[in-house]
Amino acid sequence: MMSRFTPDAGDFSPLLDEQLAAGQRGDFTRGEEIARELLAKHPDSHRAAFNRAWYEMRNGNLLAGLECLDRGRWVQAFGSPPLPTTKPIYRDESLENKHLLFRSEGGLGDEIINVRFAKEFAERGAKVTVSAAPSLMSVFARVEGVSAVVASEAAPYVHHDYWVPAMSAARILQKTYNKLDGRAYLSAHSDFIVKWKPVIENKFREGAPRIGLKFFGNPKFEHEQLRQFPRQLMIDSLRGRGYLNLQLEDGELKIESWEDTLAIVAQLDLVITSCTSVAHASAALGRETWILTPLLPYYIWALPQETSPWYEGVRLFRQTQSGDWTEPFSKIENELNKRFAR
Picture 1 (tube, helix red, strand yellow):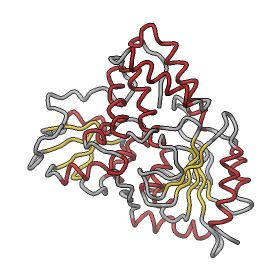
Picture 2 (spheres, rainbow, N blue to C red; picture 1 turned 90 degrees about the horizontal axis):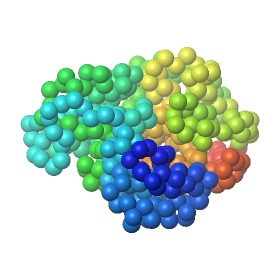
Picture 3 (cartoon, rainbow, N blue to C red; picture 1 turned 30 degrees about the vertical axis):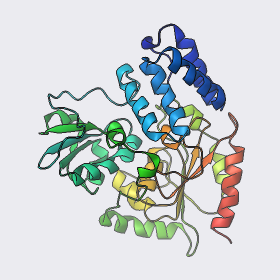
């Protein structure tokens, strides 16, 4: 989640680049030293604060980290550009009989991560309209607390009294780790469950574990190369167990929509994946989801433990050596043997 130097950093840009490099090789001691040094010398730098966010979260300070992340908006390092509206961002006003626009932003995974918070604004009395990528609109329409969904492009034209940038929702709601709700909040559509049921039943023999694999995510993601691994390592870790390839690019199924993906995942016992939007969809469905994370993981996974307060069903398998994925896959192999004893 940390980023390289951009112009606001001035003459300490080499420190920011060193901090990023330290994190990517797993030297978090040095990364945090730089974070504290920059805080002391350049407390007004939004870029330095944005990089410090990850270390705050790693140390258990979620809210402090979220506040630092939000400062990244000032240097175009976080979220989307501001919504062109004259209405204010919601802070803590009464929402009784008010219309709130929940503006999704970031990648598809970010949209899935944060749509959970729409429910809490609805519980405060708001009628919540969510803007979303068109491919996710029908899925988000079933999320508790969501009154309506519009395409992201239409967001500026939706009537609202307040709006919330989705990637700031957790900060606006003053979330700490112990206040996160990791329960499922997405659901699969019954029509698509029926569509895919015979396909999945034909794929797996009776009584066999139903495992789905997702090898890589969006190749356009800035640090995608850091979370990629040899796919054969994942296949070998299954030790001959059958699996379903969930990769859109070369998968064995004709997956045409998120409704297809959710209906398939909902009928699996386990999804093993890199840090992708499918990982978040599977976890948000409440499915057991094992996620391989690089040395410097996305901020959602910054807390250094195997489980996550963001999702009850997630287990994290962390890379421990730069460029080497053998250890996490060895752990996956061992855990598969326990989880699905032959």
